[in-house]
Image 1 (tube, one colour):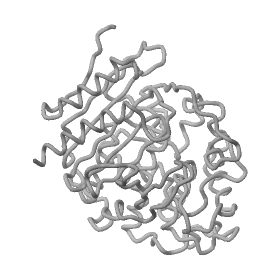
Image 2 (image 1 turned 180 degrees about the vertical axis):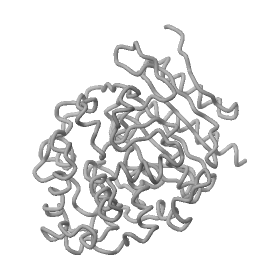
Image 3 (image 1 turned 90 degrees about the horizontal axis):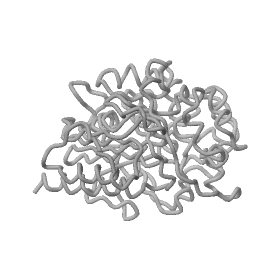
Image 4 (image 1 turned 90 degrees about the vertical axis):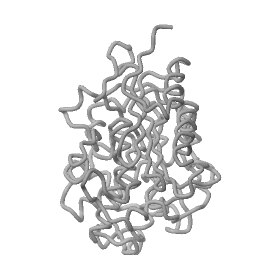
Length: 376
């Protein structure tokens, strides 16, 4: 095997994380990947390695970004919490108060809170859509506004895999006058120099890593998972590199360092690098339990906070207030507010497992051990 070049830095107290990162490459599990960890916003790990193309001719660079699939829900939820903190929305007010068209099909009284915790019933598109249907933001949100919930809102949760970003993002647009991507850049990313994008600008296309994926599991067309996004994924993941898909502000592109900056806003009480994005009280809402019921998408109970998954017996973390989310293919972010730590793993070789894979688990175990040791 040729020499594996691991770039960046790693504090010696987290040497086991670097070893786990390198092991993933030695086991030939990676194409390109990045891992970062910060405490109180200060980075103690920022690693990257591998290649940014499937031909393995273009090395992964510090500014390389890649599509993170559902990990993009983290910055979208952050934007939602910001407009909540500014008083532009209220959790228990009807969505239709801010988005009148949403009142259609029995949704007139559906509260904002249910959008954040995957309990609204607007969990997928009726009828199902392909990826090309989502290239036009106005078309996508118009369809969601017009359709009926799949269940009585608030009585259950079900992962809003492809609708969450449109639902929260449209509230951002209706209350600020800015598109989701524009709000994100102006109000957050530019202020903390986060190399993360909701909708990839032309100026960053040259930094984009290609993705590759293993065999995806077949979905029963009558299943909840297929209704949520099966048609979108029916042709595989090649569309994730299509220019039309890249421009959609419902999609996120970044790397582990940028993801950690986003998470650190919440683990540091709503402020980072001298900028206050929300109050401490609002930041704490991220990890206040909203729903803890069986989720048919994951075929398991999921403990939802306000926009995030919370530590639970199904997703065990040894920190009671920790929260997290991840995306198809393996990207993940874990936020631990008690130690003000946050870590993220972002790969370009997409593992089709729905709930993470061995690469991420190996890294997370090492990161958890390191954070725990700091508190001893």
